[in-house]
Image 1 (cartoon, helix red, strand yellow):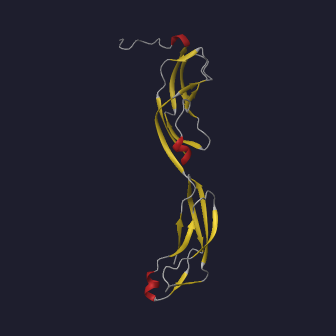
Image 2 (cartoon, helix red, strand yellow; image 1 turned 45 degrees about the vertical axis):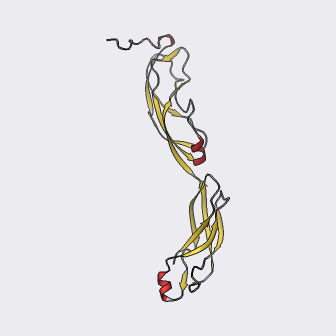
Image 3 (cartoon, helix red, strand yellow; image 1 turned 180 degrees about the horizontal axis):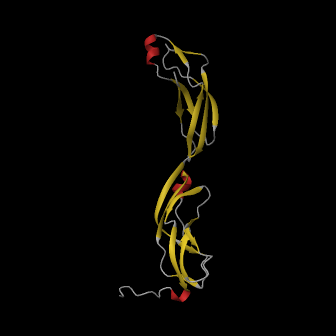
Length: 190
């Protein structure tokens, strides 16, 4: 029958049990035929998770759930666990795009649109983080003349976080001389 571990406690905050294995994976049991026929697995004594934040291996005793069932062979198994930082994803909407490194002789003819962002990373980092003023930005250092440009939206995140997706991925902008920013037709004009 298969061996199934019994766990007790909780890993350190921000960590999760990514995978585990037991060797041997199965054991042989003997006893009254009716009990052997009903045996679906053999449990272990508790595998203590409390305070763990790294991979670990432990010898664990098999638990005898019924005194009439006998486990044939060794009464311990080798338990191995892979412990990882718990991950999470989170979405943010209405993030203001920032225009970075635009020559002061120029300005944008219209405000930049709001953006959305989906981030992933360690759960504790993602849960505590909020987008700052330059999380999503346009690098305008190469703009050297008025005109229309399509510029990619870049993402700046803290170490340990990744951008899964963001929208828009690029923005069409019109760059004008600094004094001409509002020079278009007035609202409501024909």
